[in-house]
Image (cartoon, rainbow, N blue to C red):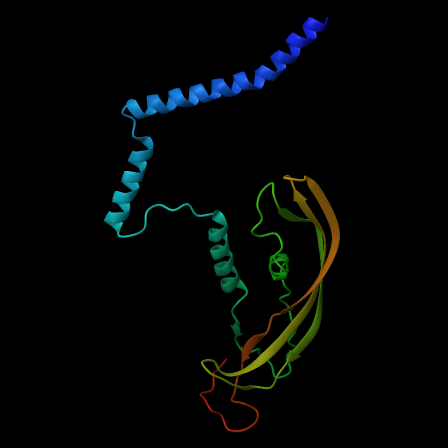
Length: 216
């Protein structure tokens, strides 16, 4: 029995070494075959990349993370939809009611939150939101007097301010070197302004007009 155990332990010690030797031998054979077979996979790729860069007058191919592309697309999306002040036509009727009728969308509210999920490394440091609920409350609805605005003319500022309360579960997880997952019930409050201009049917109500009147 003692002899059997000795042989078994020796085989266990030599097992990983045999696998390592086999892997190293296969890697060496593959390197020799690749270099002597006339295949120019790596060198050919680098040569074509350099020739293409010289032809187009730019840098060679550089790997870029899709995170940068997503940042550019998000910036353009927010500028197009949320970063501009709309200018509306005059409201007909001297005493016509004017109310805030454009509350923030869920997409706008989520984009207004602090960005804690962007730029993570998969399996190393990831943050995600789950079970998102939000409550949007109007807190300011006011229309100022007609006055002159450069590049716009006589207009009134309609102030629409909203208080947005967001409830969600923030999940932080990592898979290496120490796997863990942490869930935090979070509450965030953001304030969003939807101020916009409404053209006046006549000139400013106080003082002389400093620009041409805009008809209805």
